[in-house]
Each structure stands twice: as C-alpha cells, then as structure tokens.
Length: 321
Length: 271
Image (cartoon, rainbow over all chains, first blue to last red; front, side, top):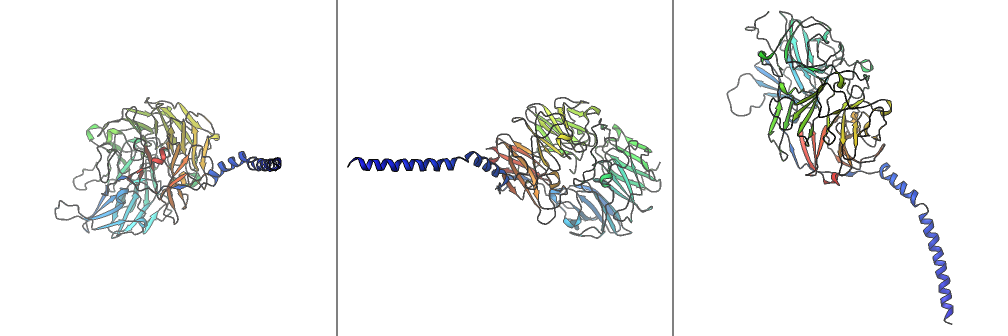
C-alpha cells in the first residue's frame, strides 16, 4: 500500500518536529540570562592575556651625575654623591691625587646597592674625627650614617627617621658644636640635630616659615666662628607653616612628607601663595629657631647665581662680616 | 630629578643617544620636583608643573637652553597647591591638575596665563577621591582618568563640582592604586584601552618597586567600561613605569622607569 509508509513517515516527522521544538525551547529560553552571565564572567573571572614583549629600543645613560662633593683631606679622598637612577645611585670615592688622564677614572671604592638605602643621594658630610659619613636623599626621609671606609652594598650604621621631612637636599656637620644641619627643599626648612642622634630623635631646633627667606633651599654651610648659616636657594617660594612636613602620622600638618600609606589631613581649597624669587644665598643665625627672619641675603642680577647648589666658605680668603 | 631639565630626544633614539636639545637653567623656572610633563602637538607647546612655586609652566615646543616659559599659570585664584603634575587636552585647550593636598582636580584654560581661576573643579564627598596624584584625558571619547590611592577613577571629561565617578577600577584583582605604585594612567582612544602600572604583593607603601619578596610590578591594560574589582584584560609582566605615553602613528608604548626610557611596539593597544 503506497499510503502507509507516507503516514508513518508523517507521524515520525511530527514527533521529530515536536521534539526539536521542545529541545530548542529548552535550549533558548535562558539565552538572554546566559549572555549576561557570560558577559559578567568576562570581567569577574577574567584571566589576563600576557603580553611578554621585549623593548623595541630604550634610552639610558649609565654615567653618574654628581650632586654633592666632600673631601677627606686627612686620608686624601674625595666623596661624590651620584643620584642618577639609571646609573645606580651611589657614593663614589676617588683619591684626591691622581695622574692626569683622558680616560674615565674608576672610583677607589663605591657604596651602592639595596642595603645602603641611599635613595637619590643629594647631600654628603664627613666626620674624620668620628670616622663617619652622613648622607641625605631627595627621595627618602632619612639621614644615613656610614663608616668613613664603607664599601659596597652595606647598610647604614645609624639612621635618623623620626619626624624629619621627606626630600632633603643638603647636610652639613658643624664640628665645633657637634651638630648636623639639613635643608629640605619641599618645605623650605633647616633642621638641626645632634651628631649623636638616636633613630627617632626630635630636632634640636629648626628654621621654617614665611619670614625666613628660604625658597627651595639646597646647599648649606655653617660658620661656627661667626655663628652663621649660609644656604643656597633656587628661588621657588610658597608660604610654609612652621612644622610643615614633619612626619607625625595623623597629626601632621599636611600630607607633604607622609608617604602614601598614611591618609593625613586634606586641606581645603585655598588661594595659592606661590611665587618665583631670584636665586639667593640666605644667611641665618646659627641658633635661630622657628619663623626667624634671615640676617641678610645675597641676591640679584650681579650675583650670576643660577640654580645654586653646593656652598662652601674658604676659611682663609673668605672675609667674615 | 637630579637637575631641573627637560630633555628632548629624536623619536628613533636608542641606547646612549644624546638629547637633541635640553631646556634648563634658572630662567626656565623649573624645579627639581617636576614629576610630569605634557606635550600639546597641535599648538606646539610643552607644559610642566612647579610644585614649590605652585605654578604650571608652558614652553614653546621648540624651546632650548635657558629659555623662559611663554606662559605661566600662577597666583591666588588658581588654588594650585604643591601640585607636581599636569596633563594637556590639545583639542579643548585645557590643562588638568590633580591636587594631592586637597583631594581635587583643577581644570584650566591652557591658552590662558597669570592668576586665573580654574574653569572646572572636581571636588567633594561624592567623588570619593582620596589622594589623587595624576590625571589623564581622552578628548575623543570625553573621559578623564584620575589615579587615586585606591585605584583609577574615571569621570566624564566635562564633569564639574561634587560628582560621582562614572566607573572605578579598584580592588585586589586590579593591583592598582597609588599605594601599589600606580602613577600616570593613559588612554588609547582608538583601542578604547586604559593603561596603568600596578603591583601584586609587597606592602602598600606607595613604592612602585617594592623590595618585599613576591612583589610583582606589571603594566595592566583594561577596556573602556571595565568597572569595579576587575582583572586587567592584558598585562605586561615584570614591567613598570612612573610615566607613560603612546605613539599612535608607530603603535608604540613609551615608558619611563628609574631614569630609563623604554619603547615597546604594542599594536594590540590600538585595535
């Protein structure tokens, strides 16, 4: 019978169509939800693609940049601070006497490496009598002390932390009064500590505030005979409060030196006070404290000062006032 | 920086190449703590901040030597406070500054100088901004990215006042935040990508290169619209940068890392 197979085929076709429809409905009824879930998984369970790419090119200078210089005449050595990151920040020690050469002279020894905690070393001072070398950094908030004959990757023997503001530029040892003087460019300040400081030592005194004349201070020299402090200033000025920059946790006046892991206090938006002053050498009383006015200033076009950094007074030919 | 200076190199420079010119000296009015730089190629200008004098300095694009700024934003109305960063939007002629001290973003006209007030200020509790340090702008898609202590906050470019961010990329999966070393965030408007340095492991001290064992810095890449605690779409492992920029024409990512300028060819960022 030609009609029977057709009927059976039709019956199977109907059953198959129903099954297919049910299957499709079951499969597709959650499509929109599944799509959203997949989209969510895209970010919540995302596994990053790794792009391990070699540089196409780079620019780097392996030669040091010298920032500070100090001489140990007794041992015939000159210490130089190199604050260049691509050259590996370091203190390089050279002999004061050497034959002339047209080649790069290697240092006699080098203090460098992670244990040294040098940061971007900006200022150096020496005590031959006590066999100590002092360094400050424009990056960190410490004063480090190393043995005078230190070499290689050595940690500081002593380290001042305490409330010292971040980013110091210069350091000077007043041998007569056994005191260390530090300039901080970020907060227009001179801090004074005993040479024999303890790690959390408070400053003996400090000079800071709008009448001090300090404007982005860098180099520092103390004349213990005339009781005067000489400071070189780049001239970038803003009004700073006495005590600004001291690291005192939540009680700090500003966030200037806190680092980023301490919230500190947010200041309200307020009128700016910043201005550009000509570069200068300011002179202060050695025993001045707080917002003390400067004694006098060397400043003006005749001085030819241009981003002055290092500062020293010739004890023989430098006339005293 | 060691000495206040802007160095200009040839685009193809490599190795120990010397700069083609430098802008340095007292008359340039730069400070040693200028942590950012922005170039407006459209108007041929360079901008850098001077946080100690609370100023934004603009130089001619071809400046060299002890050449002074052509324009300075400085004065009481500016409300600038110890700001070490600036980003220019050449299309809309605006300059953006993140204010760490005030939890605020200031926006200035970049073609104006002197004692000028910001044209917009993003500030207030709705912003949830905590210690912002850098800001970046996508003038094509009208986005602004702010690097904060907890991650990257994305606002509409024209947002003003006390506004909530449009998206935030923040949380342990992101590895982002100033405490993990994130500084400059950049946009790829073509590829709709957000590029930032982050770090996994180590203490949240703010250092990019933590010495703590297991500390792993990376450059992470996110897509526009990524929101919340989202892992990056892609990472460049064992890389990090205090600052970055893109050269779209050459499909390159340019990074600055501890005194080195490193260039990567990265076509993925532009697709």
